Amino acid sequence: MSDVHESGTSAATGSTGTTPMVLAEGVSKSYGSHEVLKDITLEVKRGEVLCLVGPSGSGKSTFLRCINHLENVSAGRLSVDGHLVGYREAGGKLYELNPKEAAKQRRDIGMVFQRFNLFPHMTAIENVMEAPVTVKGVPKAKAKARALELLARVGLAERADYYPAHLSGGQQQRVAIARALAMDPKLMLFDEPTSALDPELVGEVLDVMKGLAKSGMTMIVVTHEMGFAREVADTLVFMDEGIVMESGDPREVLANPRHERTQAFLSKVL
Picture 1: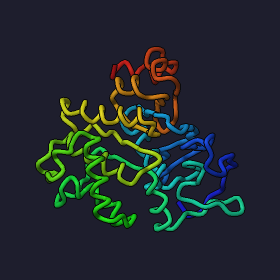
Picture 2: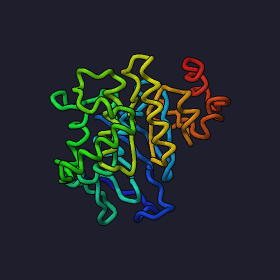
Picture 3: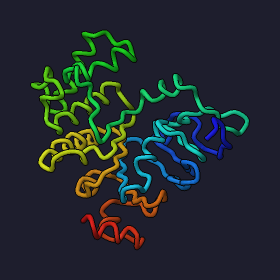
């Protein structure tokens, strides 16, 4: 895609209490002739948890990556807290921000990936401290105190000086969550955060995420954990082939899916 495309109209002009935390308006994404996202329109209010479910290859992870501009959109527009993501608008057209501006914007959006991506040569506490110190210029002593707080929050205070190789997968993922929280994000994105874990380690990561949701963190979670979606999400969105097929109250969607494609998918996973 070029660095400019036509802009749709939008009501989101700035951050207020009523501004959605995430607003997607007609978002499409193509790789050559392959359309991965097709006209996605949805919103996530401040403090809400939205769970994205659907088969592999349905565009869920791509949509998540568009929200923090790890992928650029081919059409439509995405706003976080009232501000366009990855673009500035001029004369009805959207111009892509330069990498430095985009990276600055990305600081406000925490992302936790399937793979933990911890720095193997750094301890847990050093992993959590790294971005605040190098990106935000937080003094080391202050960053260390905050990192200890966050490791305690995810139940790993006693593992602060362990290297990733000496932590279980679940512990590494909890360090990754603490690392994302260290930047004080206004929005947290989770891309199948438990799918690389052994089954007995899934619960400890989901418990941390439940605690985050209770604290009022706005979250978008790509997940196959239907029990988590039922219990924690405010909205469940089912995607297939790049399209939002169905969305609504998680209990309602899971108990009485309206679309036959949703029914077929849920019959296999529930």
